[in-house]
Length: 235
Ligand SMILES: *Cc1c(COP(=O)(O)O)cnc(C)c1O
Image 1 (cartoon, helix red, strand yellow):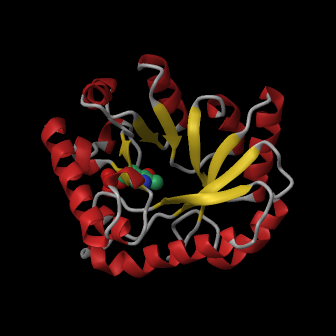
Image 2: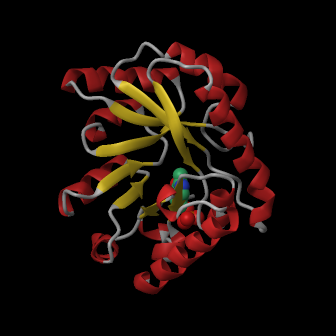
């Protein structure tokens, strides 16, 4: 089933790219594998997928250990400061920086290891109370406050759009994130080379691509519905 799903998603991405005159290479598909067994990830890997997204630190570390080392792991979920140290040298990109304190911890842990960590700033464009992320008006101040952090590179912005019936409803959200990224780019802050826009999930990635997404995060569309009853968590 993963094979057919991937073929379908790939086809949809290409169609969306054609709709707006973008090149397929400009959009990175992140296979969101949270809650899924290693065997599913292995199947996707064998089909050519190399970028996986996880939202829990322990799960990411376990899968990192179990799977080939040429995989690029993306941390897409809310990150607690005391867990930064476990993933900092394992992830290619952290999508979910949403507080100065978290950025400080990443800076400190990265400095210890003498590495530079690529991050995105998560923006709560839709202003949903249930979601993490900076408010759009907080962004300027935020980038200024972390501009001296030499072990963090701000590569772009990320947003989680609301769950909607019709993906078109999220088009203004994606458009807004793109505009915010243009504004930030104009600021010329030292450690920021904003060019990544991480937006779009299973229900709305085509619209996100049309609005300029350079990374889309697709879980259900590739791996099928998630079963949270196993972990006992409520989502
Ligand atoms: C789970 C998750 C996704 C994938 O969601 P689907 O609707 O299954 O594609 C994308 N982004 C984030 C941050 C997630 O937590």
